[in-house]
Image (cartoon, rainbow, N blue to C red; front, side, top):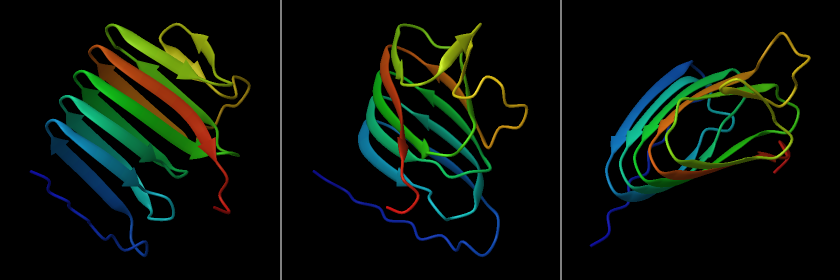
Length: 130
């Protein structure tokens, strides 16, 4: 049994999304869509997320495999209040429960709050041209 859902969003206005889903595979691409806030709440999932600048994301999940991608030139802070997590964030520096890709910056383009159970979380970058 497979269900596919495609949601089209206008980039001409600021958008806020709240997505709740169970055991699924999800691909969420928010590049160039002017989504300023996204709240994700899901169970066991394989989720890939592309965030754009000026985004606040809240991710609450169970046993999951999550891949989060950011624009290469963005300043990102990730706050993690998670259980048993295998967290791979290339180029990030950990201070307390926060991870920074540019510890010297005072202004952050992207803020991510993670609250997860037993999960694997990977962070990386995408080229804004692609």
